[in-house]
Length: 266
Length: 356
Image (cartoon, rainbow over all chains, first blue to last red; front, side, top):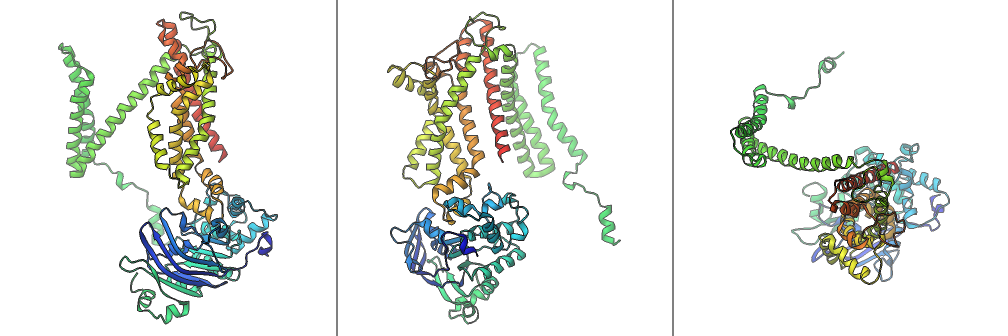
């Protein structure tokens, strides 16, 4: 099993955002976000462009602070421990909370195999079964069959959809407890999208997943719970509605949620 | 066979956008040639009639306006308003780029034609130990100066590159508070006259008792190379997509590892350019070396001991002599510098490609 491959194994973690406020410079972009991401659940973040979904997801693994002028208030509890607490190293947080970006970003100077192992190399971790880890990670990202004969080809020789699944495999090789996905399918064709969605379903057994998506059908297909973000009239964004995916899409409490999920605006 | 298959098999690729209208082609040819022909005729007829015509003045106040007018008219006739603007821009662009090309090629040609007289195997392999200003070109050469230049430039490069890359990394990868100040200082440094750099080393080292040597020369070249290396490598690092950096950090990579294993390799080609431009900046510098390495007619393989010949000071020394043979030796030195830089650049590019 994959868990035995790494010296330190991560089980799926429980993640919780408490009273999260976010600023860029003087401008507040998120106000009082409170969300709970139970372990092994897939949570979809939906909402129109510019409402702060991507900003929020980046606070969950401390990628937010890399933006100059970024400000933050609140708590992100990973298994009950605040990741912004004094003395917590952002690097350790990111080891447990992996991330897949909107645009595929394989490392251009590395081969497919090297990309999968990049996390180990970058963090100086050792693994005695490199070949096995490469195969398992690529299988979990359902791209193994397409690349098994060309592992030493440059990563950029892959198509966009394959590159994205390679990036997922790269994150999985680090065996994260939480996987954040920021519109992972926005640059992909329907075939690749379907495979990524299948991957998400399989991964939910082993980790907690948060996915930002603009695709309503995708949110309904892959997620257990959904949070609807909205930023109105230049006010900071916030969560309008949060509940099970079933409830948010079929019996929304807030009329704005109803309008959005039915395509009336946004 | 279906109808569409028949149709596709009889279709031939055409370039409808490249269709030429005969009248238009004729007018464009006339508009391109006529001003030039008129200018040439004017020049020869005028000269034959006894007038003194400066070709450069004729080019600027006669030919160029006529060419612009011709292009303007043809452009307006066939393409309307945007046509005349395009035509003017095209003429100005071609005129200016030709001007620069002619300048460049004439410099290149002077160096090659004059330097070729001196260039021969002995010129590369021998030093000038027994050579006076009037010795025949068959004897002696710039070998000692080539070695000196290679050594001094190598020392400067070894000292400058880590420093320049360090500055570039500080400016791009960190949020350091001194970035603005350092960027301004580096920009100011790139305007530093090279003789000032030489005087600086001269006053703080040579006047304090250090002997002029290859090493003091290298130190005088350092402030000249540093701004080029750091600015070009800063641009190279800035071109690496932020997504790659974030991709590495999101895997839990420490910042330093993300830089060393992802950003740096991705910027490698640009960083190589930075080093090459830095070398090109200093390889022909003369003024700082006259003060800090002075002259030597003999081979000196120890850059830390005693005056050392370098190609720029070799050229300068011989050209100051008013004898024909020594001036030709100077031209030979110029050609050797050019060849040296050419070999270095091509070699570095080939090595970089092979590694990929």
